[in-house]
Length: 284
Image 1: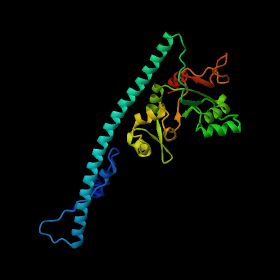
Image 2: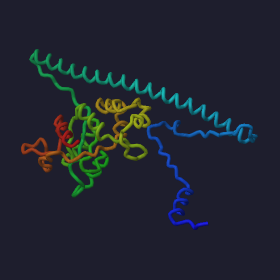
Image 3: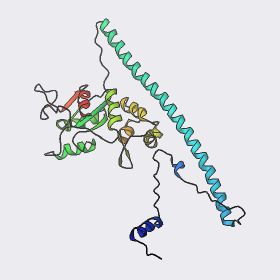
């Protein structure tokens, strides 16, 4: 017989080599759908050992349980999506009714020749505008407590006396104000990341929110936005779940970080009130 050439040997080795089957794990499937229940094929007329019979019965039970679990999860997912859609519509109506109420009160005050006192803000958005160079220990510690550990980090805070006292200590290093609904929604949708097992996970699925905050009644993005904007009873858990926002440097730059926003010369640090929305729009 003729000796085999090198290319023939290489082709034979390739054909006989074990093929590595890489099975990509689906990311959008639930856990019950990912687990494979093996099917044992029995030749017709063959004698089946007792252990194999037990294994076939066990696999049949597991397969039935898996089918029921997948069906139940699909039904629960459909119901949750429907309820989330309904709640979203209710939130939109709540926001629009509140704005209409404010407009009516302003008009009523104007017709009566009175002044309308705007309601006090309940929500703050704080942005760090100074780095770590030449920072004294006390402001450094306060910034750590506020979770503002990097330049251009931003967090949502509740307006209360302890927070305002802490902001006084770090006033030259941060700027803050009262964000609008549009700003809150844009931040959460574009730059929202959740804290899951101490990791920064992008909010690409409502299930991430439901797993962490479902017991608080928050099952989706709109639930989270509503809880943050209205400073609801679970605001602390919702704000802590959100990783501090990592914003970009503002388009057009800052004016002068050494001076306060309310000074006559004009600057950047300090309370901007509603003007924070314009800054966030340039940084988002």
